[in-house]
Image (cartoon, rainbow over all chains, first blue to last red; front, side, top):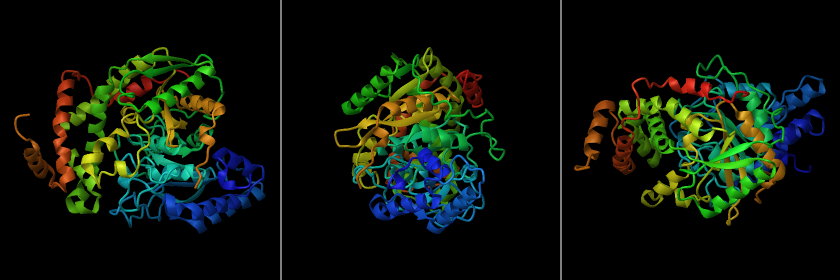
Length: 470
Length: 68
């Protein structure tokens, strides 16, 4: 391949392991692409050029010496600017933390380092990860590589845009209401949030501790499987992380959908949905059926309640951890964010606890209704076509844009409340040439199942392999 | 709702937290609370005496796919 920046995670790792490409050459290829195109996309906050080249040289040296290579050895990555690395500024997309230098390194970064990945720097994001479109008044908005006036989705805006633009092979995002899956869908890449507690959050900026998730954005489901295998699993430093053993996600990509039963909820996910999105999603279901899967429409009576409770949990938890800054310098937030945080202080504690207490029973009810006889749940990731940055800018025109802005995450939020593993994969393009995504949700701790279905879909389609013309 | 609840809510937030309404966006957000209150009204009676937050992690494990 002439441009090494076009390699996926597994392709880059394989090329490095076989001696077909050096880590330094792959990093230089990514840097060249960033230099050429990121002025328009604006995905990068901090580019650690020299550090990345030094890390790549170290990997090349280790390989030459015959050292054992990690599963991500030599693979260029960048991450949302909320993963702490000791001694490196982590702005969290904000002005408030413009000079924040953490003293710890996130467990997930340590695990990626140990696997040989090259960390090239940090990426644009919504301020404190708190909007679904990726708007950022402090770093400037990130632009969709498929069509620059369109939004990237958020909050992991730079992660989605940068992976789509082939600036690096993969990026970590975070997902509290859809912030991995939305930019994955809107930028035409693959993104997964695991089961709640599956990936440890040590050294990661919090938003809503009950629903925060760490996960990768990549070109392919196989890439996501490899990264999830590296970053998942119990962390002694994070008492909330799950002790369940982590399966070999890549080994689970068996390409066999015979006997798979797919449930598609009738309620919620298609309310006021754009016909083009629905048609694209239905066509994607046909791909699964062509491989032997069956599709059944099911009723899920709990989604309205989930929609109410999920907003309460995230708003109260976010308001709580931002209280000091909201008292001391609220003017340092963008207008929409301080306005949103403010409402969280008005929700009674009894309602917050009710929302948390109903989570277990509603998960059981959803599983009973959606997974009874079915292996996965499939839905569109967004109900709407990709909106422009202007159409969703609530600082510029809140009256006109508020409803559209909030509708962006309507289909992703329920799975944060339910804690279920969910992958978003590209499943087509709309009439304006912008990506459409499909969510694949599995039972708790069944990330392997969701990834297997996503991988099988990608063997028969090429939506994930298309490259935006920059 | 008979009276505009926003001024009362603003006062309560100030009393409980010391946080003041930062801008019009904050005030507009409180106006949406009438809808949220109605949504909670519709859910009254669904929570049972034994419900508590810890049941969520138990449900995650209980609902896991057997071979996962």
